Length: 430
Image (cartoon, rainbow, N blue to C red; front, side, top):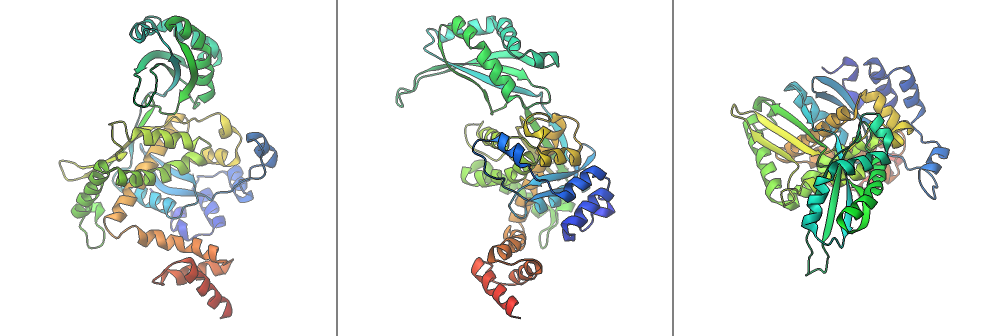
C-alpha cells in the first residue's frame, strides 16, 4: 500500500514532497525537473487561450494520496485554493483502501448534441419521421466530421423530444432532436457542435420546422461513471463513537441530504470540491462537469444527494456515487498546459474512461470524509486547523512567521484575522 517515501507527506516541504514522489516511482526525472521548475503557463500560450489576456492566475497544485481504484494505486493531483480538501480526500481514500478500495463502473462514453426546432407543424408526425430517417441523419452528421469516424467514433443514434408550450410563462413549444455521439478519448464539444450544425438543414426539411440552434449539452446522461466502496463498521470507530454508531450516523446524514435540498446543495458542493479540483488539474472543463453533476442531482424531480450510503446485510457501510463525466484524455489544454500534462504524468491514466474512474472515486472519498467528520467530531476542528495557515498569510506573515503564527492561532478561542494580526505583532516584538 502506502510507500514508505510518502509517509508523513504533509509534514514535508514542497521540495521534499517532489523528491518523495520521485522516490516512490510516481515521477520520472523529467517530471521531477518540471515540478521543481514550476508549472508556469507561458505568456505566449496564455495570450492565445483567451481574449484580452493580461496575466495568469495561479492556484495551489497538490496531490491527494492513498487512492486504490480497481486494484490500482494512484496519487491524485488537485488544483484548489480551499484548505482541507486534499487532506480530507487522502484520509478518506486511506481508510477505504484498507477495506479494499474503490470499484468503478463506466458507462459507454456517448455525448449528446441537440438541435432545437420551432414552428414544427406536427410534432408527433415529426418524431416518427426523425426515427424512421435515423440512418440518413447519422450519415449527414458523420459526413460533417469524418475524422472522428475514421478513428472509430461518430454519431450512433438519434432521439427526439417534444417540449410542450407553457402558456402561463408565454413559452412556445419546441421540438428537440438529440444526436448521441461516441467521441472516443476527446470530450468532443467541437466534434458535436460541428455535427449539430451539419444536420440542421436536413432536420428542417424533414420536420418543416425552423432551427433555433444546434449545440452539445453538458448534461451527459449517456456518459455516467459510478464509484462504490464497502467499509466494515470496525474501521469506522472515531473517538467516543463505535464503528456501528458512526456507520448509522453517516447513513442518517445521507438520508437528511436525500430529503432536504438545503442540505443536499452543501453535501454536493463538498463532493465537487474534490471533483472540480482534479478536473481542473487535468485540463478539463470543470464548469461543464459541475453543471452536469448538479443537474443529475435533480433527475428524480427534486435536488438530492449525489451519493448514497446504506448498510449491507452483514453490517458493512456501502457507499456509491454516480454522475455524468464527459471528460477527455486528449484535446484542448490537456495537450499543452504544463499542469495538465503533469497531471497526466502523475496519474498515468491510459484512457478517458480510466480518468473518469479516478475522478468519481475522488468525489466519493471527499463525501465520506466530510460526512464522517460532521457526524463525529464536527467539521471545524480539522478545517480550522488548516485554515490557520491562510489566516497567517492574510495577516501578513512571511517565511517562518507563517508556521509560528499558525501554531499560535490553533490555541486561540477565536481564530480570526484580527486575532492573527494581533498575534503577529506580538511575534515580531518578541
